[in-house]
Image (cartoon, rainbow, N blue to C red; front, side, top):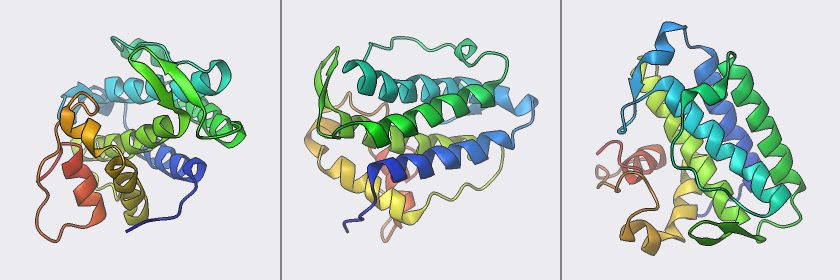
Length: 191
């Protein structure tokens, strides 16, 4: 099913879900482990922040830097404020870029700006779910946005199945799964 959502709107909603999730965290919860990679919540948010900062770098400089290791220290003393500043800059960059089809340099080759946005929307959604699960809160991924992400990834199926595009291999979702469940299974989270 094709969902007609503007990429800037998709990113804004996904980033907003992550924001709602992390603003409710207690100081102790930032150290809990989450996701299939068992990062602390602070490390997971740092991963999102560094990845989302690439949107602005791509829009402004036309290139992405290789990210080898991410330290939660990049978040500074106010983790939520750092996330917020990065998300606001990314939204502005997406809305102001001349075309989502522009090609940007990446250490592994050229990448369309719109593809970067699709990756970042997906990351924000699944990390929100990871964090919510770690702290015992239900996070509802919007069905239309999950469907939008699945549509984005369908266009990149060959690369995904070849490995290296997602940190975790897709797993088979349950029969009759809804779009959020299929997105989570696609990113290696639930079956």
